[in-house]
Length: 180
Image (cartoon, rainbow, N blue to C red):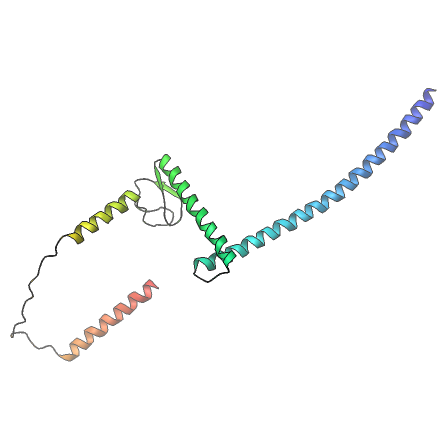
């Protein structure tokens, strides 16, 4: 009797373990395929993100876009503005400010960003600079009397004048190349 019990128990246990093994193998195969699907979906998302970046760069460069693309880019702009406001709020809490060029937080007293070198003015400084410009432009300019040329000036040779103008043109051309 005990022998029959253990034999039936062993057969039931073996059958159950086979079922569990088959289910595990099926689950493992299914999960493996699900992981492959997930990997492909992630790659699609990366490609779509790159595509979106290309379209957004075109929007920023002023290239005309389709209506739907333009609206999506405008939504991105609005959200980026909000992020900028949130970063400024965080910087204000920490008594810091945000670099207008690269977006990192810098100490409030810093005039230039240590990361990118851009000028880091605060809104108060910009407003103060605006009022200074307004005050200066509101003042009446001083009148300067022009001096009348005297007859005693030495005549300048035309060669000297043309050499000076060529030198100035070369200098301004070099300055233009540097700014490009």
